[in-house]
Amino acid sequence: MWGNDGSWVGSDAQTIARAVTNREVSASQVLDDHLAHIKARNPELNAVVTVAEDQAIRAADDLDIRIGRGEDVGPLAGVPFTVKDLIATAGVRTTGGSRALEHNVPSVDAPAVAAMRAAGAILVGKTNTPEFGASGLTHNDLFGYTVNPLRPGGVPRSPGGSSGGEAAAIASGMSVVGLGTDFGGSVRWPAHCTGLRSVRPTIGRVNPDGQYPGVPSGDHVLTNPATMHGTLQTIGPMARTLDDAALVLRVLSSRQYRWTDPASVDLPRLDITWAPGDGTVPVGEEIAAAVAGAAGRLDARPYEGGALSQGNDLFGTLRAVETHTDITELGTDFGTNIATMLADARDVDRRLVERLWAQRAELVHRLLGEMGDVLVLPVASIPAPPLGVELFDVGGQSLTWAQALASCRAISVTGLPSVVVPVGSTRSGLPIGVQVVARPWCEHVALAVAARL
Image 1 (cartoon, rainbow, N blue to C red):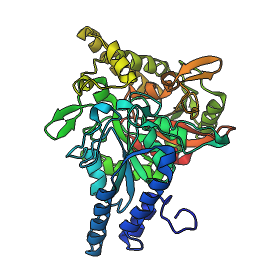
Image 2 (image 1 turned 90 degrees about the vertical axis):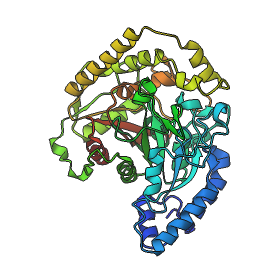
Image 3 (image 1 turned 45 degrees about the horizontal axis):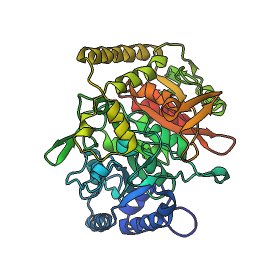
Image 4 (image 1 turned 45 degrees about the vertical axis):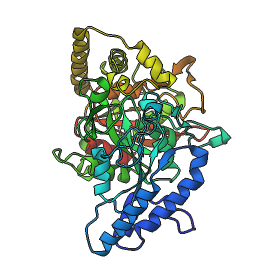
């Protein structure tokens, strides 16, 4: 428990699930503690944009009844969780951070949300995101800015994005674990900014359906495999502990893919490489030093390949040829960022697009041949930035948030799994995370190495 007031706020998922299953505490009591904490903290942080209080109360009451009958209610019994507002939740408003979906209430859960509920977790709310997740800083015209719960020196800071609301909710104790999405770094960068653990799974590990924007099909929202967004974006877990992140990933993992226990990994036999960045933009000295320190603890060898430095540029080039038709079909009432993105979209020669995807296949092949079993590198060039700031000086060079996330984007384009864990802090007290990147379907290897850090 957190503190001396008897509240379950701040407890990890496995402790809560064990206590609820053993009837040491009711799911309803755990929920009440977290709902009260949301009411206390959310006005300051603006992390939760829709509270699912009535639905959550019914779910907790039902769970307690089922436990009383002796039923097996799952490994996340009574664990309060939140979901990024890009992911469909049955009966709970899902806006994508856009006025175009302000009143959208899905009737069907995204498969990832359904898996969490089936495991006994209790949905307590939806969390803020930039419109359609198209920014690394969490604010939109519908709900405004989300504030990082970490504020060393009293400076209000961003929790990153686009899963920034999710990160702020978990880091502040409003939920225990949660679901974000990751396209160019959207569960990794917020974890780095708030001191959390997160996982970007291998593309396909977690069913991607139910994300906005997507393809409407009856009551469902399906992922569009013809788009870069639909191909590379994945749903991933965020948590305060690595064990909780691993547990949620196991719950989310599609049944056709075998799950391997991270404890089975023989760490001394791994070939681990490390890089101080992707090689295209400068990285802050404190962050570079923290990554080097982590690499030293792992006895990693320097990465000496050329594929990594090409990933960020290819990500940007592929993004530039997107038509964004999944968004335009939702309406016209968009914020400035999305409106600009749509205005910049243009028709391109399909042969050019096919050549770019062929380059991507070659890039993945080359990186796998260069990185060994695991590659350790920064999440970003900067720590959590001051709220409202969108240009950042690093080594005398001015970077946008997208440029600052070059190391994330370089991994996103490959589809490889990446685990983020904090490994230090800046002199001002801001957390520093590292990415632990593994080979396809080897999340267990990344988790095992991350646990060593």
